[in-house]
Length: 344
Length: 222
Image (cartoon, rainbow over all chains, first blue to last red):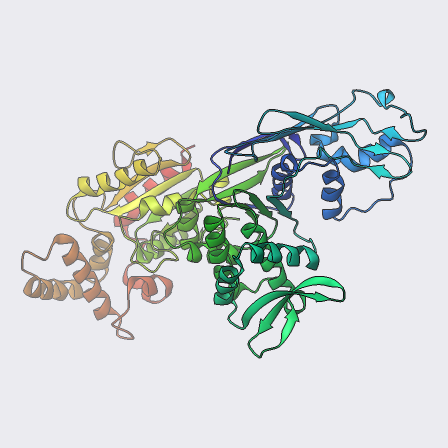
């Protein structure tokens, strides 16, 4: 469980410290306030490859052919990671927690463009950006992306399976979902999963993995006896199944979901929250979830009942120079929602 | 003007016990040309009666609102004096302290903080409630009806269970019913919202002048 987060010089945050993280942390704020940036700041230290920079860029919908000078590619790839695009100040992201999630990441670059190195393989050049991870044991591991005929994003070689980040517009692959369900099935936990899921969607009677067009796909057995690939049943349900499976496969891990409400009918939100809370508690998984939806938050208030101790609300506020955060406990959140106050 | 949007943009708020108080203050602010206040009550949006035990939870909820934190600098908490003004004041202060807000030392005093808090009891002196405060204007406007209503109240509400606050409510409700033949069941909320019925209790009456002066002074405080 992550207990605190320290962010320096990352995107809209010059300096941000978040203490007292809960089991379920609900993140709200205006467009551009920094919700996604904060989620990235949580996920990046948990990653092990410098490729995550590229992934974050793609998740924000930025394409690029990455041609030209190394320093321009470097700026296009990572410039926006740095507060005020100032790549001379290193980024520092630190998570303090109870286990392997206690990690930090520093992203820094060489002080000047002239220090970009020409590598021994002809056109291959280091970009000057260095990712340095520190693990929970205090060991440091570096990875520096390089520019050549193709971009290379080395990894630290660590295996960090228990941390998942779902971007707001992310398409979730059917093989990934099938694979997680298979893991759950092998651990003999899939029946519990189906039982809990069917409570919310009673017309889904069963789930299993089938080979479909040569690839494993999670199928749902519907009330009429038909079997259909879950993504064909509903993209929203596919998304929820993916989140649940990620949680079920993340014992002592962390699942981050940007804009949970995407694709989900409002009438299911309370049930989805109940499932999320139930899974997170059962599988000892920590959740960081953002939303723009008051309906979604009201549903959480209904779903949580009196169990508010492990829930907190993080409001991100955009300031003139940088964003800041304000934390509220579950009781504050519930009261505000009960009184129909605007909490987003 | 007063308004009750959840987007708080004015720098001051009146927080009272129930919807009747909100209608009274909103109408008073409008009719007397007072500065802008948000006017809210402790039962808003909830399936309960609100009342004087909910100030703390309402203020706790308000602090989650970004627009409240950003814009509302002063809150005037208005509670009924009921049978013991000091006890009513103390009950509100205890709730303020419990949620980490400043509690004023005396009624009408402003305790600085974010937001600054002032507590006012209705009536300002003695026992009673909003209805008691409204009676002076109502009886001055309808002396004959008031005389009959008082006879009625004295006849039916003479036991020890009939406190001053309860008698005040009975008197005002009976007077309103007597004065509004179109619907004798009219309550304070509908009365203040109805331009014609509102004349039962004219808010330009001098008995409201001290309260108007207090609100104006409160609004002018930095």
